[in-house]
Amino acid sequence: GAGVSQSPSNKVTEKGKDVELRCDPISGHTALYWYRQSLGQGLEFLIYFQGNSAPDKSGLPSDRFSAERTGGSVSTLTIQRTQQEDSAVYLCASRLSTGSYNEQFFGPGTRLTVL
Amino acid sequence: DQQVKQNSPSLSVQEGRISILNCDYTNSMFDYFLWYKKYPAEGPTFLISISSIKDKNEDGRFTVFLNKSAKHLSLHIVPSQPGDSAVYFCAASETGTYKYIFGTGTRLKVLA
Image 1 (cartoon, each protein chain N blue to C red):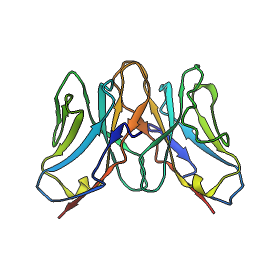
Image 2: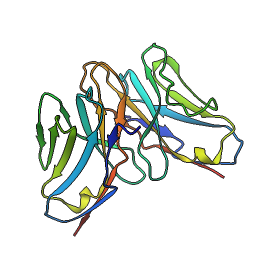
Image 3: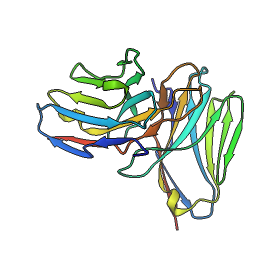
Image 4: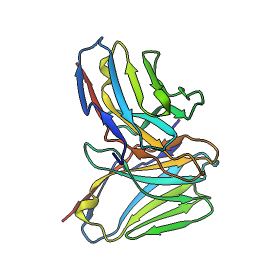
């Protein structure tokens, strides 16, 4: 498709379970971001991928969170041993990195609910 | 430390009037600023941007103003329409970096 897609759109899980969230960026976009939006909060940066460079993981809130990007395209965000405070909307965005001034394109998000 | 602040969590405006959404930042190295609009159950969509070499950028009903000395930017929507009702996020970035710092958003409600 033409835009960023994410799956699943909604995920309900029990505390302690692992979850995987998927992001398909726009074709040709080399930069990929994951954000988290908790209820009433702004967009919290989690992780950034750029081409084959080492990702910036500085925003990951704990070692239960990890992400990978295979073949410079699809990305998966994994949360192990989920906690109730992990409940949020997880947003993926991609960006065409050539040039300094260009915007991010966001997917629709995955709403994660941890019971 | 919140580097980008949107101090008004919500704003209500009558249809046809001007909507003014404000954003303040603390990092003087930021030189590129963006506004995004977000509808419920959708991801944010890019609205308009401005680089620090300008103080105004206009696109149809949307105008962004940048006051570098005050570290303040604003988004003006004229005339406001009910379809503009959404959450608006401002974001800031520094050339040569890849991080975009987002504010907490302002929920705009345009009343018919």
